[in-house]
Image 1 (tube, helix red, strand yellow):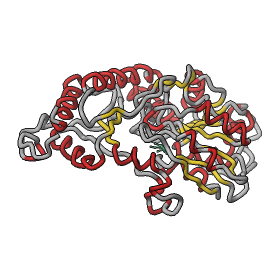
Image 2 (cartoon, protein in one colour):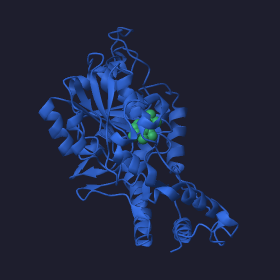
Image 3 (spheres, helix red, strand yellow):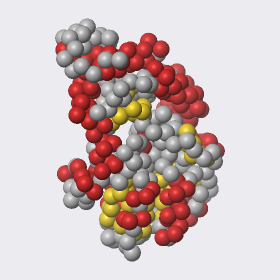
Image 4 (tube, protein in one colour):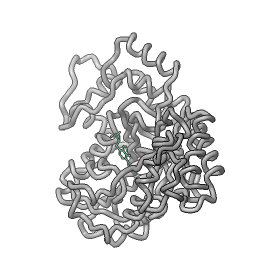
Length: 392
Ligand SMILES: Cc1ncc(COP(=O)(O)O)c(C=O)c1O
């Protein structure tokens, strides 16, 4: 790598592409537009409508799970995941240090204490060997995250949870369609939480889902997401009494029927969309290998990612320069999360030295553009830009 190479666009040379290749883009087509149009025209636009119920049913079938509850974000799903359990205030929840703030917020909204655990330096997934030392007499739960769509090592995590009687909430925000030892993510824990935010592989604009096989958890979350009312059964059972009852506290986390319709049309093509992502990822893997200073993030052999993110690991001292140099060439490379403990709100929960894996991963990590509609021309721009910047 020659940072002073005059042919690089960052140094005044000709860029590989004058039109930038964005980092992500949702795949929205005529099928999605028609589904939304139909839902609006039906005039059933409020929450928990027929399209929401169809989306929940189809998603449960797709995952092989018993209950899917469509809510307005993964953050809301994580809050409900803890709200439903009524753990005593101050109980401890183990959260990986390298994740989005929402993974911790679910516990924090419920007056629980977040305890950080380190992650593997080569893929950002919770380091299974670092969990047990974080468990105390007050620990009640673990929240593994499928960073980049790569499933956490759920068998090992569930075994630890069983040994210590802990609840496992699987933050599957990024991993719809990923497979761990032959099973889809969403079926691997007591409860899982998906995100359908605009950047995710399946999007409803904003949105999320609680997924569980536990009937009583599902029944209570149905009430909690609907302002603490039993409106869900009221609609389902078509009762004639003319009102529904306030049976608990809760919040308004149901999703509009318009978004349910979008969820159905997106779900119908999730395998196709993930397949297109995989083709792009395979093109990068075969055309960017053997570049000195560039490594791919580790994919465990017993799982299959949904390629939510394509991550590379680069020398930390050059990371921001590489990002800027790629952007100058027309590739919108980006960094991603900063470790929780480095953010002002979480400072004090750990030091850099206590989270070496997380710091190592964070300091080396860069994302390359990856989305289903990337054209062959665009993937070629990415490959040529990376090779040019790395001088290889
Ligand atoms: C790991 C993880 N958890 C939770 C969330 C929150 O998702 P949402 O925006 O649907 O609340 C995200 C969003 O990017 C995420 O990456």
